[in-house]
Length: 79
Image 1 (cartoon, rainbow, N blue to C red):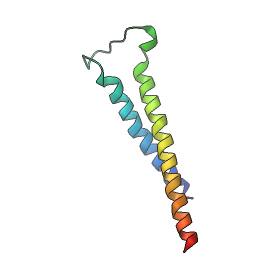
Image 2 (cartoon, rainbow, N blue to C red; image 1 turned 180 degrees about the horizontal axis):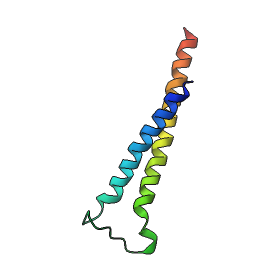
Image 3 (cartoon, rainbow, N blue to C red; image 1 turned 30 degrees about the vertical axis):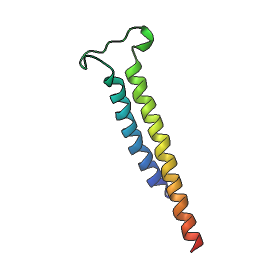
């Protein structure tokens, strides 16, 4: 398996997931320039959404590239 391709795919999808998480944190706000959270628990919500998006993106990219590499390896074995 090509480890460089797996790492690259994971990092790229993690970055995309982080951007999606950041967008999800900002979409629900009335005023985009000022963060308004009601409780102390929700003050760091924007950072958590970014981390959650990045982790999900990393996992999806890792899984997708591993499946792609294994499929290519299987196709080479059957030929």
